[in-house]
Image 1 (tube, helix red, strand yellow):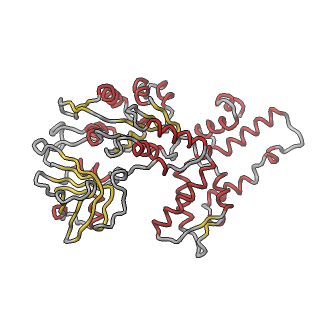
Image 2 (cartoon, one colour; image 1 turned 45 degrees about the vertical axis):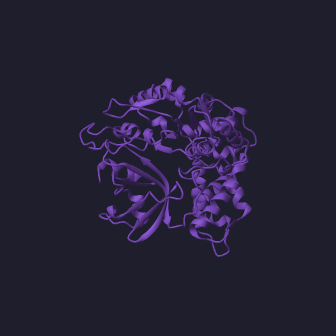
Image 3 (spheres, helix red, strand yellow; image 1 turned 30 degrees about the vertical axis):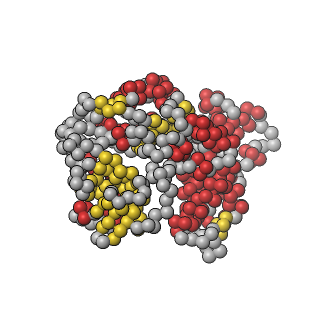
Length: 427
C-alpha cells in the first residue's frame, strides 16, 4: 500500500507506523519501522504482528525473518468496511524481544513527566506550578516564547500530568507542511475527495488525537482560510473530513504554540482575533534562556548525562569555568543552541573525560574575545562626554550585543528599560 499520502506523511513522522488490513496482515510500514527491522523495499508483507497474545496493552509482538521484536505503542482500530485497512499501529519504540526499557502508558506518546522539566528559576517554578493547576482542564493553552525555549516539552508535560495521559498526544508543525496539504493533514479526507486522493481516504491528526491532546506547533503560520475552519472545530467540537458531510464528534484538548507576536499579526490582519481568544484561554509564556541563567547548569549536566548514554561514554565532568562562560553567553537559539554546544564539546572531550574552556565552540570563544574590547570603559573614549552622547553609545553597545535586527532591538530595549520607539530615536 505504497500510496503517495502515506509516503509523504507517514515517513516524516518520528514514530513507527504499521498498517494492517482486515485480516491483520501488514500492508504498510514506514521508514522508521523498516530501518528498525532492516526490512527491504519488497519485504513489508513479511512482517508479522501478534495482537492476540498481549500481556501488556502497550506492548506489541513483532516478528520478521524469524527474529522477535517488541514494539511499544498504541493500536488504533478502524471500520474495515469504510477503509482498506483495519488497524494503524503507532510505535514509540522498537527493540529486540524483552529488551525494551520503557515506562508503560506514560511514555507511549513521548510524554515528559512534570518532574523531568528542568528549571529551578522563579520563572520556571511558576510555569510548573501553572501546569500542575491546569493539567486536567479542557481549556485551550497557548504557549509562546522564542524559538528553542522548549515549547513542545511544556506541551508534553501538560499531557503527562493530565487525566488524558493514557490517550494520544499528536503533534503537528503547521509551518512544516505545505499549505495545500495542511487541511487534509489536520482533518483527513474521504475516499475520492479530490483528484489524486487515495481510494481509501485518510485519517487526519484531529481524528488520531481524539480523546487526547493535539499540539499545533507554529500556529502563527497557519493560513487564514484554515484558521476559519479550526475556529469552527473548536467552537462546535466536531468536524467533517475534506470531501465528506459526515460529522465526527471530538473530545480533544488543543495546545498551540508560536514564537510570533500574534497580537501584531492580528493588527496586520494575518491572524484572526477570534481564533486567538479561542486558543489563548490559558497563556504560558516561556522566558528566553538568558532570562533564566540559573537553569543553565542543570540543563548542561542533563545534556551531558544523555550524551554519555547515547555515545556509551564514561561519566564526563565539566569545569566550573566552562559553566560560567555558558551562563553569561547570550543564547539567541536558547535551549536548542545550548544543547548543540554541549553535543559539540562532548565530541571533543579528551582522555581525562573533562570538558574544558579550550573546547568551547569557536563562536562562544570569539564572543568572549570580542567582549574584552567592548567594556564600558572603552565606550568612553575621552575623559568626559555629554550624557546624550554617552546614552547613544550605550544604546549602540547594547545593539552590538543583542543584534540590530528587529528581534535584537526588542531585546536591547527590554534590557535597557526603554521603549522600542525610544531606542530607534536615540540610536
